[in-house]
Length: 167
View 1 (spheres, helix red, strand yellow):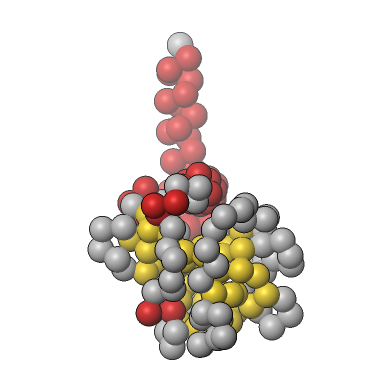
View 2 (cartoon, helix red, strand yellow):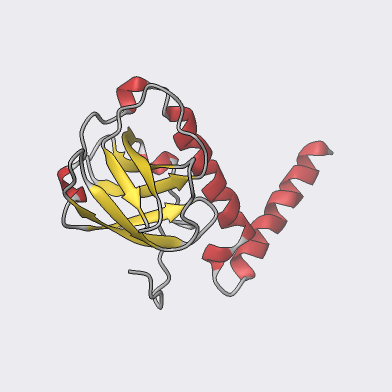
C-alpha cells in the first residue's frame, strides 16, 4: 500500500511538471535544483574534488551562474589580484555570508557554470577567485563533480529561457 501511494504521488508530481507552461519553473524542477545544490554541498568536504586554481575559461568568458532558488544569470570573468573576479548579472545575489562554486565535469573538464549559495562555505577550502554584483563580493571556490549527478536533461541546472534578457 505504501509503495502504491509513493508511486501515485511521484506520478502526480511528474504530471504536474509536464503540464505547466514552462516546465523548467515546475515544482519538479525546483526539487531537482535543491537536490543538485545538496549534492554539491555534500561533496565540498571531499578535498580531492576541490580545485586549487581557477579554470582558464573563467577570464574573458560569460559563465552561466545561478543563485539557489533563482533563475540562471550570467557572470563575466576578469583578471583580479587574487584570481578571477566574476561580475554577476542576475537575481538573488547574497549579502555576506555567501559563496560561489565553479562546477567542472570530473571526466571531461568542461566548465558548466557557477552555483551560488547564501550561507557560509565552511572551513579549509581554497578560494580561487571572487564573485561580485557591484554591491557586494563573496568568495569563489571550484570543484570537479560528476555532471550527470547534479544535472538533468528535463531540468538543466543552468537553464536559461530562450527569451531571457539576462546577460
